[in-house]
Image (cartoon, rainbow, N blue to C red; front, side):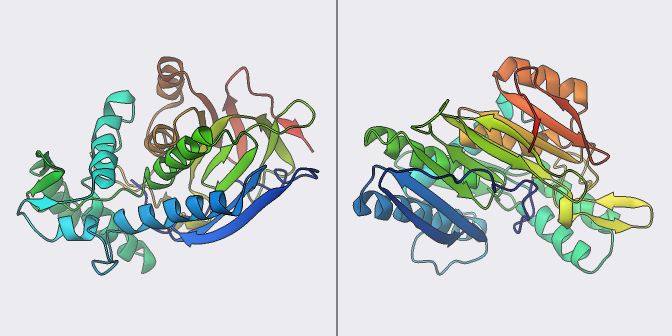
Length: 320
């Protein structure tokens, strides 16, 4: 699971291109980053609708602030009583618990407290104490979220909920549903670059170019259309302590902050699934990633030792 603040691994410098169509655009600060979107052949009403979707899901998925004006994760995390939540948060939480059945074996929404403790410890340049890790794992293993009738839930145990691993992808799914209903097909939504939704350009072959960039890999890109692109990576949030690199992505089974992969990019047709899988795959071997890729009909790019070590055969990675 991801620590809340996430610095993106790949940038979208190649996405924006000249287009003669009318468009609306906006920047919204939410999910601890700036979400930048551009909608072609759309109206200001569409722009506001997308802004409202972003702001609302940012509020209900917040596990730090209980005074956002809506019932959110923070409210659930501070009680063991039954609590009524919105239908949208109810569905979002249901999806987060079901995604582990789709190959995201290292995704668990109940590791919020463990994530926070790792974040604080790494912020001080320290490895989290083993006793604390074991205590948090015990909480996770002895907790659950019960889904009751009438959009009510009940948290059992002491583990805290965290949706950082799917929140951006999930809200992009909601935006996609809105755009589809409005017959808007040419768009790009960059949710802080870690989760991206692209439609189809009206010119050329219809593909957008997605640029890959970190400290070593430069001027690489791949093409995509009508898809979600999700990434998880060590990048700038990796913390070197001794001879080991510790990540902002935490293994909810072992409590470890050491990942097997440097970065995983997932191209999918469901944003929340792509987000959860890219997070979980940071703890998978390459062979496991390939197996999940085949089962879930997704496409992956894996980066290690500052180079692309694998990409799906249908993805062509080019030099700019």
